[in-house]
Image 1 (tube, rainbow, N blue to C red):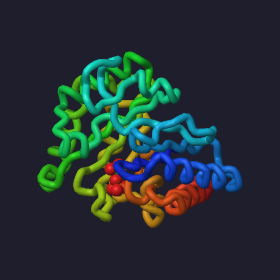
Image 2 (image 1 turned 180 degrees about the vertical axis):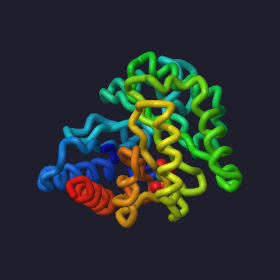
Image 3 (image 1 turned 120 degrees about the horizontal axis):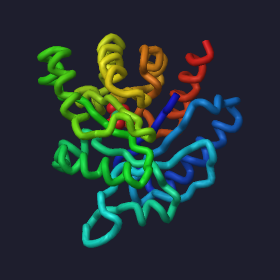
Image 4 (image 1 turned 90 degrees about the horizontal axis):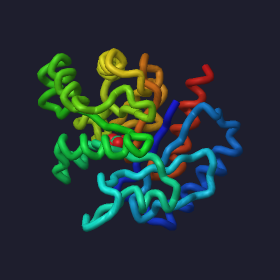
Length: 239
Ligand code: PGA
């Protein structure tokens, strides 16, 4: 199972360090299952080589060039300094708020795949598509997966319906199940759900057939809340 915290534009370098220290203490004392993989995506200024074996650090965004004149961007050289080999690509906020086209996203995917990075690739439909029914949702998701190598061995797919992100209203288990089944027919990559995941719904989300974890925004920003999610996920797994 994968539980990943997306800090978005929250936390500083020093608060990220404190967060990781507490998270690590929690994981050590909690008789924590090694087959739950924990990831943290801090903002770019808080990327570092943190000393916590049980937590993998990834970048929320990175550009598709080795280095050069790309104001405001970071790439493999900057990530390499900290041994970071995990990157999030295609998050709906990058697509919507920062105008990332599917073409750019495809380039980023190909670039980081070529370098062997672990890629969390995010897909998800907006409300108007969801309201038109599941077949529309599937064809939209299919388009977001076009030209993405779904057989890539270091791929993790996060299904994050845009209408569920940051709204406090997660998708229903049946809706998630339908999408997981569809994605499972296309790829063997681990499938995550994201969108208003919290301690109160993590158990039902990871109980969905085909769902192998969650990408968590808001409810991961406070370390106690993320720890509670991990604890509940672990309890559910053991039961
Ligand atoms: P949320 O964000 O948990 O705040 O809905 C999820 C995400 O954007 O990955």
